[in-house]
Image 1: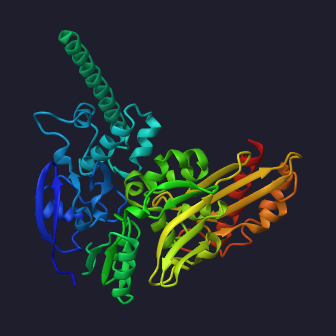
Image 2: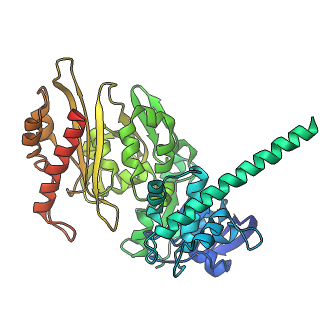
Image 3: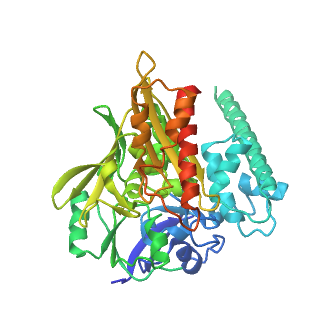
Length: 175
Length: 286
């Protein structure tokens, strides 16, 4: 009945193939099979969002998704967000503004907030707090998280500005 | 928490899904976004022998306008509906109600068809479905049939959906351009589910009398319901603050309201009145 199935998905840009039981949750697959332990299990009941990852660019709770449902998709975990050489703006924001205390929820919060910034590059404070609905933090009281997200929004805007300048300089040079 | 064992199959068409359902001999369940079913399976409150994943069936996706109705494919996610321009333009109140379901991650997975098929009385969609005269298209052993939202919900987590049936689309009546609408919700602070949600749609004729009104309520009742007593009292009347207050007293009459862990029957009845009154005031006087 629950015999293993072959699944394949791209995880953080790398093709992964495995045999898994249909009942294997995506979060367990990522943590236990692929050793990507940045994705955390918090409530395990799709409330807290510590397990947030992306499937085809959309944020989802991996504790409420079967690995087999992600077959044929592209999955991104917090490990795919950035690395020490090049941190994602949201990671720098959390660093600079100390957007965490115990850090347990942080991977999920960063994934949720990076997704928010992709859709809404200049969110208001209430939009950030609304976006945090699916990412619960029990330590910070959210104040520093909001600051961290605002920091990230500013640096993403600056990066975009710089890129535009470089582009227009490049176009100017080609003429 | 890990569900007990099951077989998993992905259907690529409605016909294939129906065949797989039949083959499962009553032991199979359709899997859409999984955000209602998987938590139940993890708690082992339900143990289907097989899951038939219908979330990738293309013919079940998308939003279109057809004969004055907004037709939403059953596997359209909440997020897809919220971002759909036709939906935003035609029925803003539907988009408003769906936008506050769960949270962003949930809206990225949960589907319109899955929501209604699950039949959770505390979900946000049933109220809007009732207020917008929704019709649920079902394919099953008897072919295609259309069930009005008002007939669809029978009991908590029980709907008219037959064993070997699948919800294929849901259509909502596009309110007339002169109508006003609102969805007001008091959510449970922990779960985010509606303790009460009132969706009201109304329009007036040239003389200022109510010519169309629908009030759909979810959350307080075992079965989402239309507050017909309130609707009937307002039809043809010229709404005043005093009248709205008076008729809202009957907002709980059509529900099946009881007590549970979260709220007493008395409190729920009170919420029904207060939220109906607020919703109507917003429609008529704001």
